[in-house]
Length: 94
Image 1 (cartoon, one colour):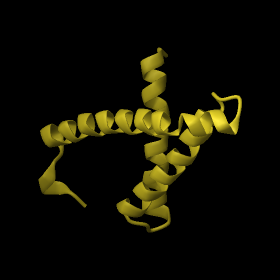
Image 2 (cartoon, rainbow, N blue to C red):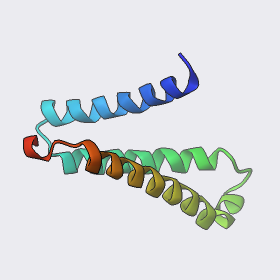
Image 3 (cartoon, rainbow, N blue to C red):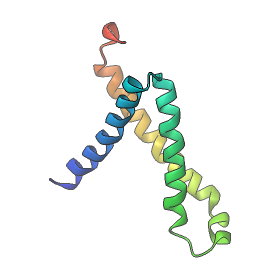
């Protein structure tokens, strides 16, 4: 499996988890999305923390960290919204 395939598989596993939570726990897509974003924010804060030698260093870079992750998310979200505009079956949504 190449790196892109492994990358997409990891992402798909997170989506499968969210879908399972919606069906098994009877939560809404919005609730699953909110939990997903909360967990991702916690994880990304940890990932960022592992790059610094001190709390002060991380504090000094806080805005850069936030800018990096929000820019990446915005680009990815725009890409996937475009894909859904082009291919989502709006007549058959649940």
